[in-house]
Length: 140
Image 1 (spheres, rainbow, N blue to C red):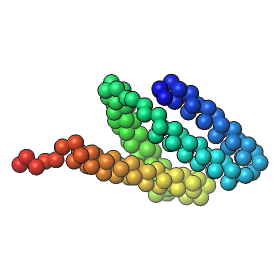
Image 2: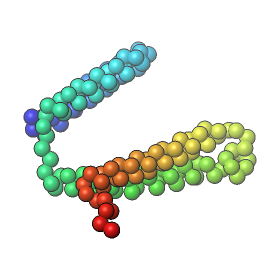
Image 3: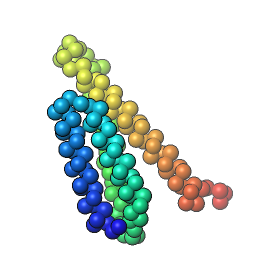
Image 4: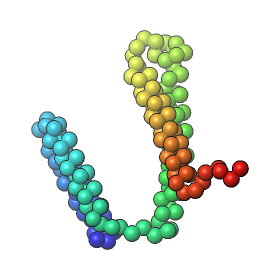
């Protein structure tokens, strides 16, 4: 299976899952929507394992650079967002002190935890990949 056929199949499965979820939500059947999403994911995992899609060096390099850029943009953005959402709740600004926007503090905490989670995943994966590809510092 080539990349074009795989992408077409992905679109068809995504449309099918979207239709199942839309039907399930309109009928208030959230179990059906969860099962539809899980079924679509399992189907795509099985198809991808059989597809044997080849990736050339240029595409791998582009993916690496896109991943690096996404991390470099997303981590600071969500960290700054967490900081900005947490400042008003601790400074005693009257609007936030009355409890009208309590959800902003919760959202800030979620962003802060997500930022820490993202940074820790990056550090752990960097450590293991660095050791796997011979980047250890044993030359001393």
